[in-house]
Image 1 (cartoon, rainbow, N blue to C red):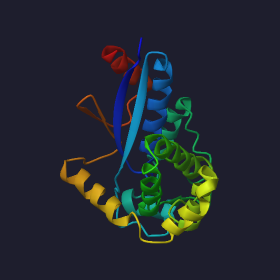
Image 2 (image 1 turned 120 degrees about the vertical axis):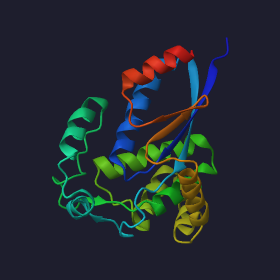
Image 3 (image 1 turned 135 degrees about the vertical axis):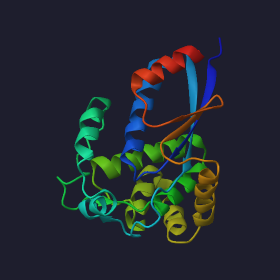
Length: 214
């Protein structure tokens, strides 16, 4: 018996920690259904704060500018720990932690999207890991060139040429604008079987939802 294929579209900003949490919770839920369905995940760019400095901003400086401080972070980290989000190198514990500007990271994802949904999905997961767990500044082209080359060594030179050009910029900005015109006011935003779901829903919520679909 052929397994059903379910497509999930996710609009997301790498600079949003709740997008990382939402990603982990969804992936953890999908692993429970691998024998019953195939899942295609398509990522779409979103940039919450276009005013972020192009090279990223120091973590605490950014939090103070936006919210007066980072008091909201501790609860999020505590809640997300069981989902596998440790935030090892993102936050005040790392003096070099930045709040990323994500235009170039979305451009790298755009590059991998041309290879298919799987390479793009793998790239997204790697960028989350590099940013929140390894402390990489994914605002910078240099870091993104390194990450892209690690993901696809055979195309390292092509990836570097792409990232050091303006390629993909127009497409990313247009997709971001389109999402906002459609009414996406916050991320993560998931679209599955015609229904739109906002926020980092729990693994149990996803399991319940998928169970009903299957």
